[in-house]
Length: 205
Image 1 (cartoon, helix red, strand yellow):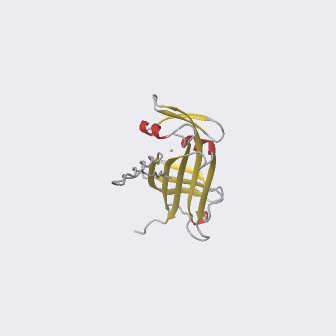
Image 2 (tube, helix red, strand yellow; image 1 turned 90 degrees about the vertical axis):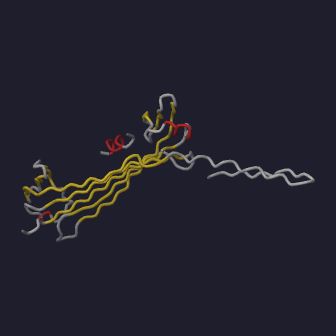
Image 3 (cartoon, helix red, strand yellow; image 1 turned 60 degrees about the vertical axis):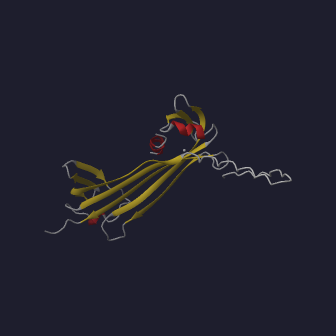
């Protein structure tokens, strides 16, 4: 699972110098202008989206925990509810399952010394209270910090070296960003996915 997520997500002080100007007998020379601040390092959100869907419980086996859902287009989804799912006994045929799924992919380029290569996975899950309709909400954030191993401006590509040493060459969306990075810089890639599931009884007619 981690390998697939890692592949899915490979798919980026202002310094002011002060100078002292010379003086003449008639007037004081204007101080030299401070150098322009360096351009910020590339970064931003590559993609983000929210998908919401509903399905109706078509069949359920409380002993085996197998559930069959029917989507609005008539197609069926069959699965076994994990043992972590509380209050499955509260689910009945005809109940409506609402699922919301969100994912985003962002990156930020950092200079050496401000970050270190590595991978971190953090997540949190909330379950329904005992006696309530089954429901769960959780989010997982995976952060991978890779090193820029090579830059090919002619091809518009950059080669990243992951924490485990593997190399991945990718085509950049904005080739001008290659002028703002150098070999040895770090790219922090953050992939976030969140899922919320709730079960509701059908409205009475």
